[in-house]
Structures are given as structure tokens and as C-alpha cells.
Image (cartoon, rainbow, N blue to C red):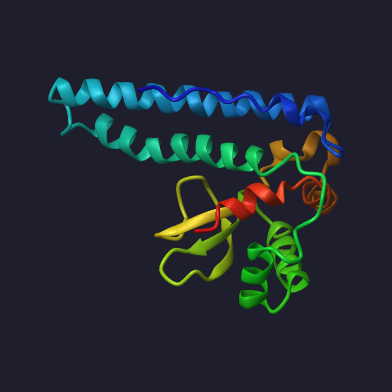
Length: 192
């Protein structure tokens, strides 16, 4: 079953994100979906043809993590955007954040600080599936640094394509715009 591109065009009206930036970002995401399908199709054919002991098979298996996670992280990212209000101060997410960080403000400070670190990647608020703890992680590349057994709650893309068109080198300004557009209801529903 092939993966299909999801339509996130409703986000084009978000404050702080230009139509050009979003359309470029959607095109990049579409490439990950296309490449995920191509890699999976090729691997399936190589399996049928008995070519699993080849270096090409091994490299495609390694590449699958990059393409698939690039697709999925973008989906999580776009899905947790489009909100207009702040976090529900009485909600389960706010309570979980306060348990782990002392307060929402301390968590936000840590998340934003993680996002302004030098480098490219992702900032992800993960929930440890074993004990429920919330932890902000820096994900350097799509296919590395993901904590095993953790559930992604809030995803922020900090690769240059997510902000350079609108913000240049002012990543902190992009992060402020990101926070103004978080759909906290979506994030809260991801809690397990």
C-alpha cells in the first residue's frame, strides 16, 4: 500500500508563514512521500528477485529511515500547526509538562533553547512510553537520534527550509511564529 501526500494547504493562512515558504515546504514533503514509496517498491522487488545480499539492498534499507522519517516528521509538524489559541492551562498536557519541567514556562524555555542551538534538524517533545516522562530532544537528522520507544508529541522543523525564506538567519523569530501557530489540541491528543 503506497503512502499518499496529505493536503496541508489550510495552513497557508497562518500568521508568520508566507505562502511561498509553505508551498516550498509542502513540495519538499511531497518528495519524501514519493521517495518513501520508491524505496519500498525497489526493496520489495529486490526481495522477490533474491537480491538481498547486495550492497544496493543494504544502502536502500538505510535510506528508508531517512525518507520515511522525513515524510512522517513533516506530517506531524504540519498537523501540529494551524492553531490560534494557547495551551489549555488546565489540560493533561500542561500537567504533564509541569510534572517534568516544573512549569510550562520552564518547558517552553528549554524547547526554544533547543530550537536555537546551532545546526539543522528537529526539536521534538517526546513522551517516554515506559514511564510517561516528557523530554525535549534535538534530532540531528531524520533517521538518527530518535529515542527508542518514545511517542512524539510536538514537532518543530529547524532545517533551514522551514524558515529561511521568511526569517533569514533569525531562527528565534521563526520559533516565536511557530509557537503562535501550535494546535495544542492535536499535541494533547498525542499523549498516551
